[in-house]
Length: 454
Image (tube, rainbow, N blue to C red):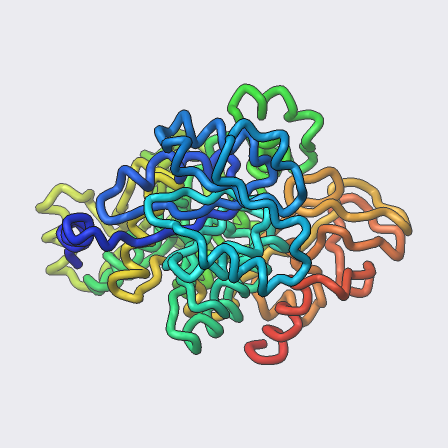
């Protein structure tokens, strides 16, 4: 691939990749600030809950006020300080008329800011849509509508991917567009190492990530409120990091893209520094903790924010070459990437999707692993689960076949479910234990996925 030269060529021709971003949180803000500085790319539209703050941020990011168009579907235009370029869609009830109005507008060199996410997939000029929401329900709506409108989807919503990624991938393939999780997050960074090792006929023993905070299954947004604020992070997102759910989700994403599996439910998650990996994450017969090989894992230690892959080879000749090249003494060797740059790397996925019609990472193996819902505290009938990073539940990675057999509830669809029986802390939650929102886009896509893919 020659991404840089191809992007530079687009820049010179003036035919940039036009991008829509949905979700202007920490990741979305970074994308909005950076993408227009990337050769061959241009942000055309963003969807946000707060038009005013996004408008102010866009101006800080050097978007010219005269080039910003506000598309306000809720009638708050009078609160904005822009004197022109405001399209108030509140009175236009017909959705097709809204879309027609937007597509007739002069959009060259403009930035659209809207509080109506449904408009973004319908804008004809947009080539690639980025889901930066982190919410499975929202992500389901965004990805489905983007694919139907023949837009490439680059998602930072790994939570949605491990819930309905396989059906989104199948739909994208049938439509001729790309559905992919973004470069820059740990699953994509590890996938690079996995592909590298696999191409070279090296046997993968374990692959995973460093976790850069303590593991506390019972933490919650209130406990972490001040810590999250100090990191400029959402307390619910921070809770998903600390209670381990995010690591489970990321490694399930990797599992479904590579065929690697968890060694045990929830993985081992040992405390280990980089120097210890080749002693710990190897088979038990060689003094390690693994009962299987070809596994996903996470470790707590100095590896974070990096990712790793442990491998071996059956060839004595190759092993001697690895030793000669100072990769260790064997029989196990380490590949290590000391960083991941999160959404800063997203342009790589945008370019691969648009220029080569290729994903960075998606569930090509279907479902190998999922993330089950586990009670974070004692639950009673009538309690409402608040989903990933909340007060009521945490997630553990488990094999998809066991999830199906035991009817465990995927944590991606747990939010809003009403508890029907008493559930003890640390007890897995099953489908029969809750009432699910049958009107959910996410739930209905999941049902289709279960029927078509299994």
